Image 1 (tube, rainbow, N blue to C red):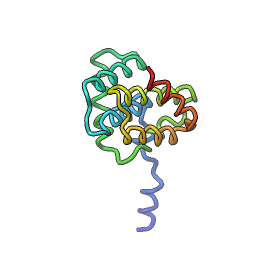
Image 2: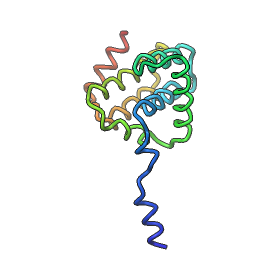
Image 3: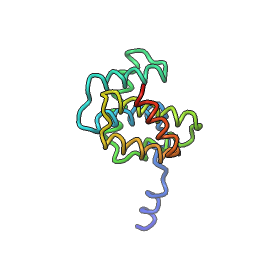
Length: 143
């Protein structure tokens, strides 16, 4: 019995290992847009635009990505599932992710405390410094 339990815990989590960064980013952005309880049409459009621009997607591809990201978000219990897929990215890509998150936060003109907290937690998990996160926050609040 002990061997059976040990083998379960030693198995790598295939979903974490196989998550592509694009899907991880999309899932985080989908979650962020909804974290305050409401996804406004403006937030929805900014989400689509961000993903289309960042990953050079057409309308159909971004729709499919958002459906997949929403499914991943609904099946996840924490952010680690997504942030672990982003930890190997270079610093400029990580900063780009935090910038995208702030664009979602400020899309509706408000910075809800749950949104702010989520950006802080994700930035910490992917290795973006407090200073860089705050610089991006100020930059995106003025955009």
